[in-house]
Figure 1 (cartoon, rainbow, N blue to C red):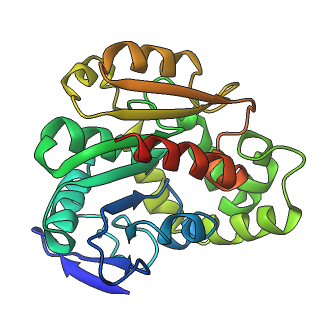
Figure 2 (cartoon, one colour; figure 1 turned 180 degrees about the horizontal axis):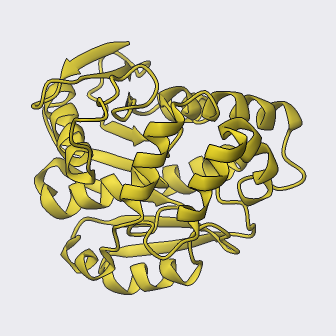
Length: 264
């Protein structure tokens, strides 16, 4: 685990994993996790990626081992974008393959729009252009009433299929439910102010969009609209209503990613 100090003074944690052949110069894949997640949530992806790629995993501010903004401090999407650009500049000497899951994908899209020279390819998993057109605002009063872990268990059908490993589901609830509820409310409600669909035309790098075909948190048709706006993009659907495709379908997701990266 490493850290860097952001431009506004927070400590952000990240991992750099490189098990590639030491005489090669591997390309770098940067992974941005979902809301309520952390860098360890990518554990099932790592074996498949590390043979060919150097992998950088960041804990978004307020998550995992990264510092959480105080209630009186500003928090917004732009700060997460700036953190990611700083991470790339800190850990690499060239453009990266940027991968974002859900809220991490909102960040990744904005990085590709604002800082295209940092990005070689973009891959988005369950990540619409913001949460504005979702029912996520209804989560907050329920979380305040029954607690984060109970809320997650009661709504787990939105995130995992019935055939998901129960041990994985329990681990997910324990990990995600251990976040600070007040910060998660702040994070989610802020993301619900964003809809930057019309900005996606500015993304010029090759882009992979992987979506739950029966998305139950965002809107499934948003992914088709994204593909129409991102000129050099490919859309793949996984036949599920479970939003957490990176957790529930890791092998399928990684295979799509590796095939995409190999073609670029």
